[in-house]
Image (cartoon, rainbow, N blue to C red; front, top):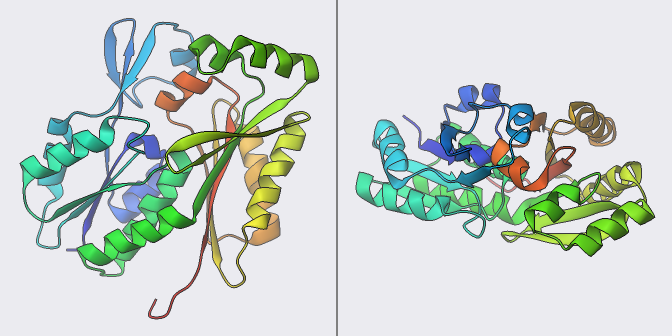
Length: 278
């Protein structure tokens, strides 16, 4: 059997790709009005109707159980959301040690669609028959190549959560600006805001175009929070211009939406440089 792939639900992987590659997804947790629920058990719309919501990662025991279920002669590669964002990576390492055997835990240093593209790189390597070390190398190569840029219509939800100052939210509304963020090296970095949401989407496409490498294959994921039409439009523009090898649109996980609010739309991409022997 090939190397088994395990990840957490922050990766926002489409169900068909989870099934195709036999990926095990360990769900994140939300607490809604003191009631714990697994990510995926509550819709984004229902979640946003509540104000008292907190988030947490899977427990070490959940990762231990997932690894033990998949552990075979070829081993298991566990790929987690950025350790800077969540305790999930630490829990995965504890669970892997408790499970024993040939297990490697990789911090993807990203989340959402970018994490999904890293997981898929590892899964494709495993499907080709690569050993555990080679699967980890494939994941680390993808981590270096992947990008994630997103925009929100306004900063209101982030202001309420305390993640940006109220003056920034006021200025954004007054000037009609659409905030842009790039997630890299485990942290969100503010980019120069765009003059409106359409201009923000254009800037996202331009950044993907700027990263293009001659002869490289494009893998891309459009993500959204209750904005499926915007994500589909963004993805269609990418398809028309670049003819990507991998392309899908998927909702952001509810754990992420707790912190950003509705209307979030982003694009994750990876220009895969084809290397000798592949």
